[in-house]
Length: 342
Image 1 (cartoon, helix red, strand yellow):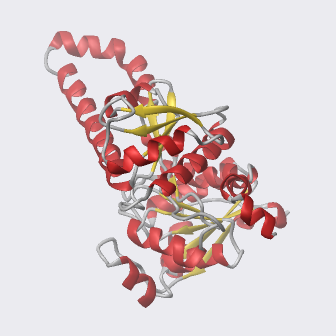
Image 2 (image 1 turned 90 degrees about the vertical axis):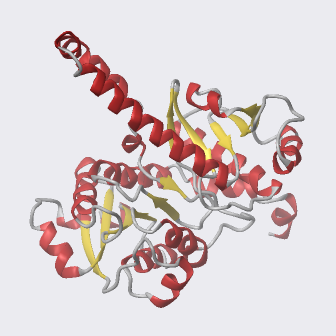
């Protein structure tokens, strides 16, 4: 049975709510799927003490001791080099050596991005792995590629982002022939900065994707495109603004509902429907952001992740592995020359 598990190395010490929410989420994931095994990597005494709160299938959970923790504010490269026995480095190394299929962490984004490329390594042919979170839209979920890994991306990188994003949306989310768009400051082909202008014709002439042209930021929430391509600076601004506006709107709606007796009565009537609607815009349900193009799956969850997001990140690894996403990415990315060399 153990050989059939999809194995996930979880950085138990990473994130604002570690280890409590991280361990809780990992245990929730094992209870939801008997196919999953989690390796909780962290300070053994702390992890085992936290595990006492839960009943679980011991065959699905293993504790791996790591004596150090990489903090969010530490310089990523230096932290990776100096803290070899950190939970983050040890968990990534388990993916590199094949002990685990995937890695999940709510810890340092910078260290995860560096470690993903330096420790786990890139798939042959992949120039730059992008960080690609699912974001809620009117029509479901769209993939934002890249949101934080490559602020100095080149046109060839963005073309690969589009290809990898298309594979992910088709195989993991189940959207056939996903629509791809590049973030721009207008719908016209001649609009945009130098990077967008140079990348647009490459995407337009790429036979592997369903390119629909430019997308303006205001059209992203409508679900106009399934794969949204941009370099990391733009993507990170979009993601953070998305999160900020969402939280602000929810606060304003709640405050408005509590402003008078009439509004409070109305709030009681609409609460069930509103709760169901807002669930679609809850980022927790989508899990973490995969670093696409690494040899093993690397998933970065929000620093403030709660148990639900960690659970969904672990289950996301299950789908990713079962759907053989890396093999499909290799097929899309590897050039004809490299195929001939084989």
